Amino acid sequence: MRILFLVQGEGRGHLTQALSLSQILQTAGHEVTGAIVGVTAERNIPTFFSEKFTAPVIPIFSPGLVYNAGTNALEPTKTTLRAIRTIRPFWRSLKQVRAIIDRHRPDVVVNFYEMLGGMTYALLRPSVPMLCIAHQYMAFHPDFQRPKGQWFYRQAFKFNTLLTCFGAHELLALSFDKQPDALKKRVRIVPPLLRREVTEIKPSAGDLLLAYVTQPGLKTELLNAHEQHPEIRMDGFHSGVSVPDQIIDDTLSFHAIDGQRFLEFMARCKAIVTTAGFESVCEAAYLGKPALMIPQPNHFEQACNAIDGQRAGVGTAADRFDLDQLLAYLPNYDTHLSERFRAWHGQGHFMFLAAINRAAASSSSSSGGFFSTRMRHLLRS
Image 1 (cartoon, one colour):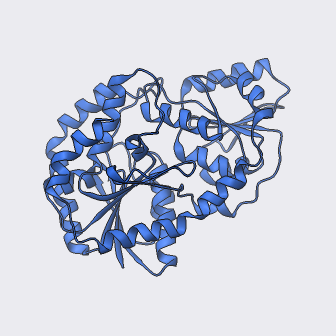
Image 2 (cartoon, rainbow, N blue to C red):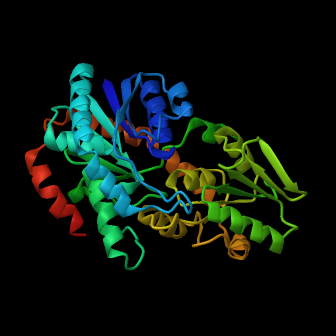
């Protein structure tokens, strides 16, 4: 069977999920013909993906999210204005996507939360069935927990998610744990897709706390936490570090962003402090490392992830680097969670292959009825 990928290039989560599914499909004897990756002028395709993905990688412009350069907070208004300003190049991108689908002639298109996919199927109606995969599709599940209030951000998040999945045969919602499917909304609950390096590394017990510092404010909070608890060994991976290792003192060091080294540190840490990105929290859960999850400001999706992760027992949610909260949580962390999480993850191989087969066997393509009713149906919940 021939499968074409569409991948959102924002962050590393969707890209690593695409790498993982590619490995599953190739092991099963299927052919991944290529990956269309949404990029912007400021965001190219990361080398970790282009070097490891074995099929052709095709970058195509797609409007990206806008973050505040000082605080790293998501800015919804500027994100919307950018999308409006780039509507003409975006339309050209949709026509490019349709042409690539026609040229590759895949049996199934798999879309990892890229708006180019949903809008191409909504407006240009390819005949190839599309399968959509992302944790964000949990937003359409009736039992998914959300922050109280924040009505505007909630609707904006659901609307943006909707734009990625028009015309989809099914929505595969990646989840921390098993939950009932919501088949009336075409949502099936599936395990996380983790990179092979995570599943192959052997974790060990350790005393250090590991922090993934993407926000300037978090670095300041980490330094303050270090002053309050100088006896605790802390290592932080920080985008502002230009050398591999920057030693501050005997118990605090910063390191340049490096995916493989971060994984090695995670395997031997006691706990991690990170934003509430789904992928990194799942990797920590697989390795049995509790997480302090700090959503990026104004990032509704990450706020949902933190609540959902706390429900599933993978860590504790906070709005700042609260080291005392993490230290109080550690004695209550369920040390058997990693075993259950690994068992859930292990079911994914067969569930993803089954979904591919269902999509390929479906006689329906992108349906007009789906396009016309989907917004009303999904935003109702």
